[in-house]
Amino acid sequence: MKSKVYFIRVNDPDSAGIIKSKLERLIRASEALDFIRKGVRVAMKMHFGEEGNTGYVRPEYIRAISDNLNKKQADHFLSDTNTLYRGRRTNSTEHLKLAYEHGFTKEACGSRVLIPDDTKKEEISEVLVNRKFIKTAKIARIFLEADVILGIAHFKGHMMTGFAGALKNIGMGCAAREGKLAQHCDISPFVRIENCIGCKECLKVCPMGTVFIKDDKAYIDPEKCIGCASCIAACVENAIEINWEAGGSNIQEKMVEYANAILKDKQSKSVFINFATKITKECDCLAKDDPRIAPDVGILASRDPVSIDKASLDLTIEAAGRDIFKEAHPSRDGLKQLRYACELGLGNLQYDLIEIN
Image 1: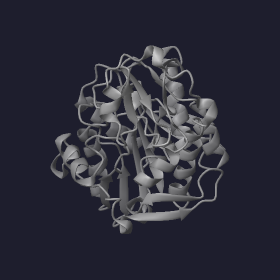
Image 2: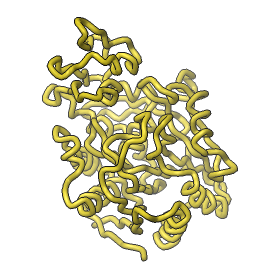
Image 3: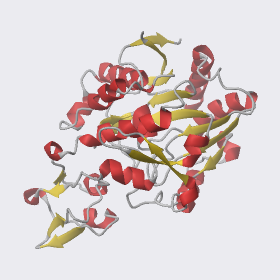
């Protein structure tokens, strides 16, 4: 049976006020949040954007969702986990400060922000999954203890997974740092020396001191590398690559196994909203204003994380007139994550698209 995906179009010239109004219409027409009741604890999982980035879902849009939950008298909060790479989001204190700086205050968006501290063992849970790659998932307890998971994702490209939406927001985004490391652990980038100009940007962002300079060229020590890919994002010459044949493509399946660990007991208690707006080549983890690579598409809502990502992908390719994600990341097959998620029972590749006017 096909899953239902609700969709409302957004145009590039639409103001923030118009987009918020459209989101409110989508929520009403889709009835996506109607199953949530008084007192239910709702974890709104999202990405607050790295410093200098503007691609993240804006606080005023979150306000529309929070207002709906407030009417239901639900106990809701916004949350994300800390990162592997160096930046403002590597620890809970700075991460929370950055979220506030980006406007995610309770006054502005109608919901409090909670950032779990995964240096404290009591804030991490281990979930036995026994899958192909992940046997035990390390997940921020705050998401497992919530009654409902509400995934709010900015749909965009991604250097590791081709594209990123609901599945990555949950699978990578709810994992503790140790869990993120497990997903990246067999990925060790290498430098194409002939393309390296010795600018040292990769050295500046490496969190482990893995990158070193020799004869004005960058080198990566694979024994120390944790596979966070910060160096790939930082390289302006595209001189750093991954040997995908040696296991780099496994990250998508590991990510999906983590999503399965988080959602397996919440498939009737989870809902997803994708913003296919300001669609960028890379993730909101980039500490810069990444330019858009496709026209704005719209906002989607569904109870199925696989269908909403597939619909977001199809609509974006249609709007761009070509597969911009394959064009941006030719070595990545983003459909791999969707096929594997379907295999694990997380959702359907087939969907009915219901457009809201």
